Amino acid sequence: MKFTKMVKPNEVERKWHLIDAEGKTFGRLITEIATLLRGKHKPNFTPHVDCGDYVVVINASKVKVTGNKENKEYHRHTGYFGGVKSEKLAELRDKNPEKLFKLATRGMLPKTKLGRQMLKKLKVYPGSEHPHTAQIKGN
Image (cartoon, rainbow, N blue to C red; front, side, top):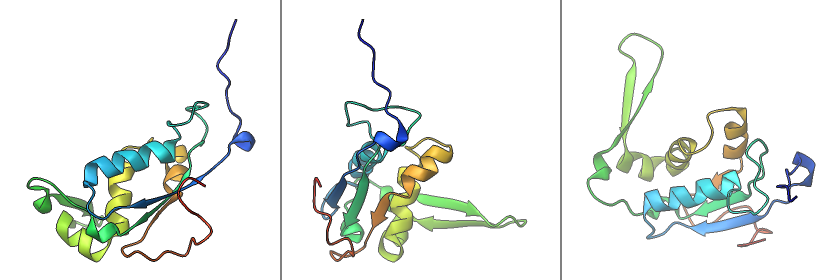
């Protein structure tokens, strides 16, 4: 009989992926990022182990949004009465693209400690410069 190999956390090999977001569609890019962070692109994917890779996104402020999603609002609550704060997608993209990418990616990852651990491997930069000079696409 053949059995599926369950990977242990110390056996996971992580790679670094550099993604240029300039001109790419936001939603399709986020699904690609979530797949890489989760590790579902690997043949030895194990659901209960963080076997994903690191992802570095550059030119995040130049990502393309289709349709009428420029007016989409992201809500948060301060904890006080009437404390609902809203920001539009276009404002977030220009002001704080890292927050926008993390909010969108978080929704596609598990809602557990494992998902929060996966999200820490996402690095987002608004311009083309990033401090991860040793990491190139696919390594």
